[in-house]
Image (cartoon, rainbow, N blue to C red; front, side, top):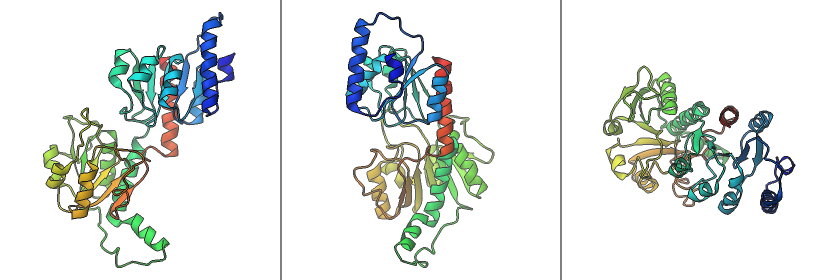
Amino acid sequence: MLEEKYETLRQDEQVLSDFIEEQGRRSETDTVSRVDSARVLVCDPIPAVAVERMRAGGLRVDEWGGLSPQMLEDLIGDYDAVVVRSATRLGERPLAAARRLRLIVRAGVGTDNIDLAAAASRDIAVLNTPKASTGSVAELALGMLLALARRIPQADAAVKSGQWPKKEFSDGIELAGKTLGIIGVGRIGGTLGRCASALGMAVVGADKAREPAGWFEGLELLSFEELLPRADFISIHTPSSEEGRAVIGREEIVRMKDGVFLLNCARGGLVDEEALLAALESGKVCGAALDVFAGEPPCDLRLARHPRVVCTPHLGASTQGAQARIGLEIAQLLLERL
């Protein structure tokens, strides 16, 4: 059958065009009743073990990476479920074309790339995998804390270039005794807080919930306004706002301690990048660590290239363990729901 023939598809646009055309001819002429198995479109890379588990459970899975918006719109109508990461955007147009779609699974935490209102209006369920990458993102943030405090990337680059600037890097900061402020004390923020506490840091947090999911013994909950001037290091772990407004902008930076360190391993756009750049230049912010940017990859590299910025290319969930857990959770969700 055609579906079996194309169960694993080559990443080639001409093949995809032929596939879509053949699907259309089949729907017009084929009188054989449709196989009961649900069809799943995987738009972004997921572990092979997840695909194997879905197929073993009776689902028919097609993997297509790097689809253009038009090709996604042309293809999506033949599927019962779609799996995406952060690269594929599911807006109003592809969802309007998704006549069979019942379920969207986001491999990861954020659903900013999915039009939730458009999905809800069509009774399309949207699920994510928030628990699978908690530890990996928190560990990256902890690594960023250490990298900022001791300027590890800069020292490494200097030695590799043939320098031995021991005196230049003799002003490192110990984390013990410093205060970490966590904005958004969910699973990731709470895990980071417990790790920082074990290193001797005082941890304060701000969260909209009275009893945040990441609360732990020793955490001091403050209002957002109270947290800003208290913390030596501030790490952001919140969703994007519905209005798209930055959580940290010029006004918020003014309220912070002089020489504060700022981390964002959550979502791009939570920090006003122009405001942060100005604060780094003035010395108000002593250093920043960024795993995410408002636009990825960033076109304006002034912030990424700043000598007091440590940055990574959105690696929060990019560990072998996290990817395996995400993949298995995706497979489980699809097998339960379809």
